Length: 217
Image (tube, rainbow, N blue to C red; front, side):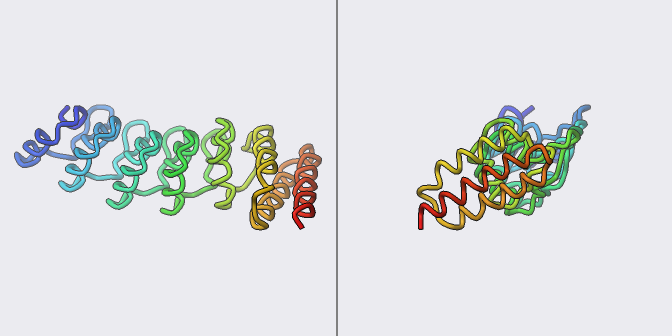
């Protein structure tokens, strides 16, 4: 209770009195998880210092990192990663911390998790990847970030959103460099491999990139 109400002073007293920081309720929630759910940074720092396990999993397969990543708190995500939290865990729906951050459009957290080694192409139980989830929610900046980081476009991606987002990137390329043009061409080629029915859309995207490249010369 002290962890969820965000009272560092009370938590310090309880820890000093020998409270078990790893104790969990019937749902598998530890004090660290409860503090993370309401983003109490000071309490989380105290619990981690006292030995709380950053990799603890609740009854739904949720980790503490998933909780803060799904809320876009990059400070706490960084704190947990430094304490040893892993990025590969998936909940009962098959979703990872990276997927939850991407679905919320939290670019700083997404970038942090990618740099920590998160699997960019991991898929949930419905076959959706971080890129798919970001596209579904129309998070353009997040889609761009994931594509630049090497995310693959495949059947789990909502193609209409992906094509529209790539098209919006074309509109911005007048002020972009050749590296971004090359990235767009790679994406269009990836779309072409998704399914035969999308080949024409992929070709149109590639032709648009070629026209822009010639116009900039």
